[in-house]
Length: 320
Image: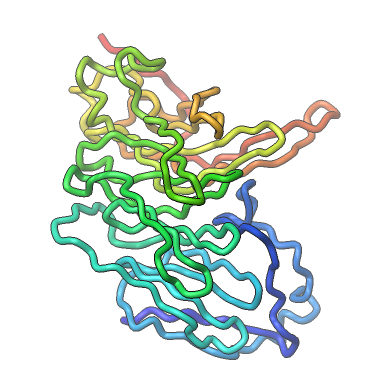
């Protein structure tokens, strides 16, 4: 079956967002809430299809389209991406990059979308590249290697724009990899910092792993994080430890797998963490979207992180 992208419009023109940056999740807070009011409960029943764009590709589409200045930008599986005219559905450009052979993937070649900053779009390619495209033409401005797919790594998540950096995670925990979160300069793709989600023995949390295990401990980061500019903190969820179903060779809590980590976005320094499932043996990845909100507690406003995890933290693992 070929995938299609369809958009229903009212008779009035589509309201496009004009901004210098756009990100997966509707913004750095990850709330996915639109303040646009042209479509509401009084006219939603009048929506009718205006056009359908056929990609001509098989596979699953998990991309979140970004709409700005009358254009729609979205990614597809197998390293494809498009720019469309939002009113007509006409293709403005199509980016594609051939996949190398021999990629190990647990869950398919999907891609979760773009980030936009200024006149550039940013996406990952499944073989582990971060790519910057010219927003007007789709031409490659720069490309940076995140990790080597021959070691089991892959990339599927949407990047996040924070200040003058583009941030991204990685996948591949099922193949004996070591997860990380990276920050790169928007202007040229140079790496600013890397936070390893599985600590080395001498690092904080390293004692929760057996000796020599950290380099294949898992902890993938394929779902986009969020950022609080007031606190200057970055939040990101992490996936399963490795091997995911067999905990016997990795006694301990296995930090920072199945956790949410809070980082200083300027340096990548860990500020705090919360592990939802210590010593996971059920593949309970904690990679949901970390949604930021202000909530009321005891009569005062409190900054909070909302996280829909697979399992409530109900125990701690203790090795014998």
